[in-house]
Image (cartoon, rainbow, N blue to C red):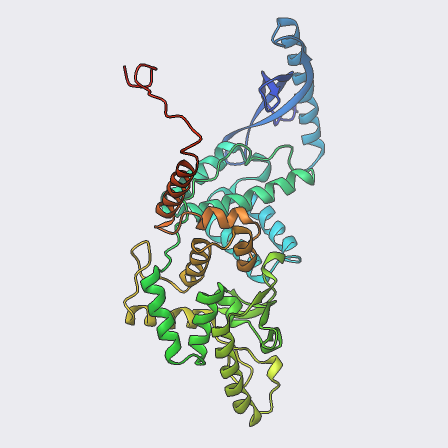
Length: 426
């Protein structure tokens, strides 16, 4: 009887350096590279950091020999363990599926279903067939490159981000020695440019809303352009969250989507739960809307507080996709064009609110709080330069300041002739 076949058939050692952020070398180490064939007879390799370290450059013949001896000992030990321990042969698809079901216990069901869709559409058909232990950074890079040829950068980033999360969990649970997504970069996303309405476009929308201010759709349009609410937040707003005496409303619920189904849920982040001031124009429209709903609900027997502001008297809510589609019809009828030259979407009404608020002096931190952003940096990145006239106004403001200072100090200063001082271009 012959000897049993060894899984790891070859081994080599490679030196590498670990460094601080400033580039200072902290250690000179060695890595063992063990090669083997998977079930499809494809060569794979396993990298293991060795205990052997070297001083100075750490690449002397003596240190290299010690690393080779340690690597060979490691190879024999791993082969012995491979013979004693049955291999799981768990694929990336199988592990990611278990990862998703574990996360599903603590995330929104729509988010869990999105992870399942990523698995089915983007992972399973390609790298999902590879055994988890055999997945390498090269495999992941090839996968990302392939996705980038077919899908938008945002889609590719979402896929890689979720795969990386699963692989890091595998490392934390000692299922993997190293994260195979390490070193793989997310595709560069285009800088977001809000397609907000300019002053002329805003005036059109405001006049349109004023034609029938308590109509459910117009109330929804007003909540977006006057207060910056998201479509799901508007559809999920109930009367119990509206205080017209204090002119405030609380954003505590939103309508989420799970495939083709809509459902009521809490906002995605804590920052999205917020209390907002209701401008007088919107407050008047809400009072008229509430009086209208009160009449309708009396014949049905429903409770006002539980009803949705732009929903029906029977307790039904307006679906976000319906709101968006009706806005498209209105935007076409009004011949609206945003700052990017396109017809504005319903979400662009939120962009319009933020852009106008910043352009007319509201500080970024306050706008961020109103919008429910996670931090002011996000608001600043998206909206700080969205107003086409902002740079012109800024330059003119500085010019006026300089001229005023020059006039104020003209009698205190001395005009210097620059000719011959080296600043005259000679």
